[in-house]
Structure formats: C-alpha cells, structure tokens
Length: 145
Image (cartoon, rainbow, N blue to C red):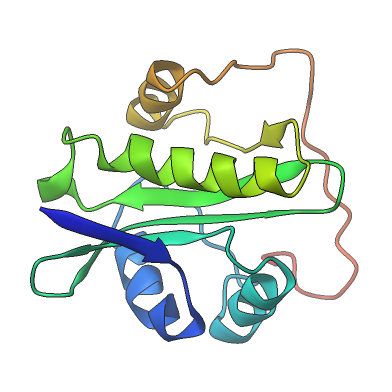
C-alpha cells in the first residue's frame, strides 16, 4: 500500500537518498537541495512522491515545464516496491498535472545503458527518439552541473 502526494521541499533529502542509491539515475552537481527547491517552486504541483505505510519515501517523479514543453527528471521507485504500478502512477500524476498546465508533450532523458529504464518507458508509452542528440552548453566552470 502506498500514498501519493505532491512533492514538497521537505521531501528533497529523501528523494536524493533514493536517487543516489539507484543505478541508472544520473545525478549532477545541479541536483542539489537549493536547485531542486527552486525547481519545485517554479513548478508547483507537478512533481510527486510515493510514501509507504510508515511514511517513508519509496518513489519520486520530478516534473516541470517551460510553458511549452514538459520535462520529467529522475523518476524512481525503490527496488523492493517495483512491479506494483507505482512508477506508472507517478508518471500519470505528473502527466495530468502538466496537461492541466496546457502542456501537450513531455520530454525526458534515459541513459543509453539503462535497459530497465528504457523498458519501463516503453511500457508506459514512451517513444524513443533516434533523430536527436543531446548537446549541452556549460555556462560556468563546473563540467558536472
């Protein structure tokens, strides 16, 4: 049994702990508490957490938009809680929140070697794009942002 609710700033430490413990999640230096809090404030009600019966965070989906496109980041479920529909529910909640904001398309990145992640996204209706290459401009001195 789990409970879903919008993600708040108080959930950031537990979300980071979950993300840091999972293969396939690519955290960068920009995934710090202050930056994540700023993202949540810019995109209220778009990100969600799942809690177990004891109130421990077992899943998280970070989502937002720029007014034109939606973005999902670091969707994750604790390994012992997978295959129960929790990941799908987290994605559906984010999608509904973004759609309510007028967003018609959600983009996300999956590491090329994350076979489990790619399989999940295929199961929930994701479509792999082979016509794009991700290019980043680093605006500061830290190449790991």
